[in-house]
Length: 218
Picture 1 (tube, one colour):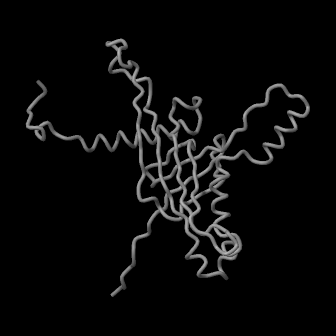
Picture 2 (picture 1 turned 120 degrees about the vertical axis):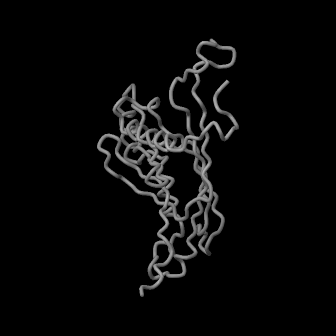
Picture 3 (picture 1 turned 60 degrees about the vertical axis):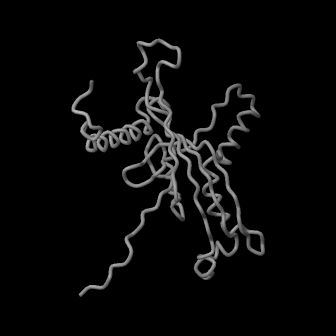
């Protein structure tokens, strides 16, 4: 008789940074603990606002603007129990993990130096620096192209050298739809996959009018 197999493996959520042109994976950021909640807000993009053309009332300009909010905990306590295996955490606490998250919203130092060099030689127009495409991964069914809109870190505990050992990260994300990127962009195809997955799920869960006590629409 085989023994108890143990608890099921829990998948982690997180963010993957990719090169939008080649789809090459640049960095994988798995959250240490999955958030207890994920807040999603969808703002419909209707053609007709209040007082507009009544003939346009059912028309949409495109997909809704979808935003996500979550809070994730990061804790070095377990790692500090095994200092021989986690030397970096012993020396600097959570700084490395926090830096991995923070650099998602920074241009690289190389990009900043390059732009400074262009300014020094009198370049009139300097193109804004392009960042990798961020994908919010929340199971195999939800891989969303996103832009980070809000980011805050609350450091809640420190070691004797004032290295943070417990922190809470709050993220605000905006899903990038086909309205936000050029045709053929990697984010557009990922968004379409996301939308088609919604349509498949919705198609298999349609209710019946009898649930409302109706046999037809008046």
